[in-house]
Picture 1 (tube, rainbow, N blue to C red):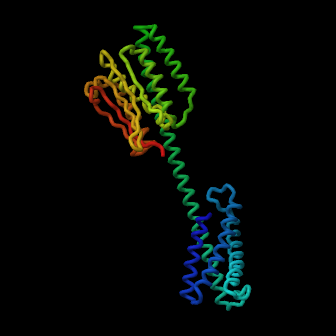
Picture 2: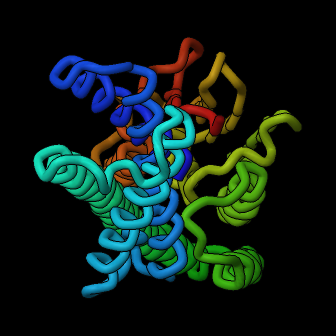
Picture 3: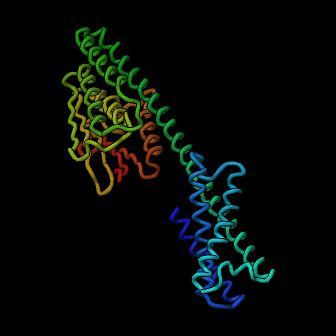
Length: 337
């Protein structure tokens, strides 16, 4: 509302300057008349629309009430504004009634035209803002739906891989299969009982990752070692759920499993200026030595899509050979302001 008042005042100054140029007379008198009429009209119309609009999305009265409000604002503004101008200039009260027909008609036409023009301008601004808000809401809803779809694709992918491993373990080591099944039961209970929010703290992502790695440790035994490094300052940073697990799955399936002695997975988060950097590295066979398999690359592609959906071009994933052998996946995306 204050912004509307400032725009109205500027417009009144322009009208006063135009009247001074075209009709002569004192610029200060024209300015006082113009500001008084414009300000009173603005207060009536802008205040009235907020009272009458209720919950209407563009804050403008529905139906004929908008036209009635403008008519009342024009009338009150013209009468009261002229009284204020007369008092300022020392002219007789309601001096405009003594104007010749031409002067009175000019004053009325200028007041009505300016008021209607300003009302239309403010209405258009409000409608434009409302439409932009609706577009942004639809864009956000579409992004949320896409994230949900990607998450529902990732969860069965992980579950099917785990069940396939469990099936193999049942035939060769039933006690470890039972232990793995208990871990899987605990992991699924925690996952399904958790919220389906679009983001959760990075600490929750690391906790979920620790449960998954413990689950994999039952199957791989001493062939799997892991470290998780999360600084305290980054624990509450919001991230999409299931962002890191596909990277760890990829390290196990294509890096450590083909290696007889297994290896180590390290997950480390740190801050780089205004970005969060997360590195998932392994000491597996490396990118070139990893054998191709059905479904390979699915998890990595899902991670890339989720980063693009949430962070746009600022969300990046880079996959490269680790300096000491193995593979390193690096995620970069902006920290919240």
